[in-house]
Length: 262
Image (cartoon, rainbow, N blue to C red; front, side, top):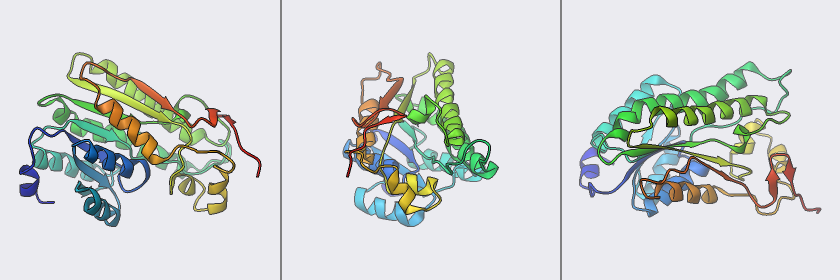
């Protein structure tokens, strides 16, 4: 969508940037925030997915790799141009898990990738957009962490380390921004069945990916988490939901999952 078209929108509409918007929780969040009346800039690496999402929802799009500082600069410029530098919400959703090896056998490149996409991309994006979030009516930084940010488990060392770091970043930022008109919110989902998360983690092994959810009655889906995001962002400005942990009923804890026999 052109900047001219964007400027014809209602200037009172809330605005949001959603990262990792090409699939899963990110795409579901774009759909939900559009339904809530937000102007949304959907950000991801896959242009074709973003184009389809824009056709479906009317969102604006930016193709960017948020591990690349120059692409983060392009995002900052896009917010300044399209939203006049006044941003209501940043949903730091981009992330992922890669590999299931033990710490002893973990691949350094997988750990590096997880820290790049979960931690450093969130850091860069938040730093770039904080001035826009402070402007006007004030804004929200929402961090999509995980229940993996609250506990360790075998085969998850790299991912849990990255999500712990992301969660601590949110906690620290909330302390540092006390007194500013910026809320810092964190959503920590448990087991969410999406098209790509487990598949990416297992290196494209579809059988192993499906086994993650085998026998689990009604794992969460992306729309469940998007519903939580929308609820948190639309609370009155004096209400800050520091942390919302959400799991399916079948998952009592990270290590306690009820699986039905087939």
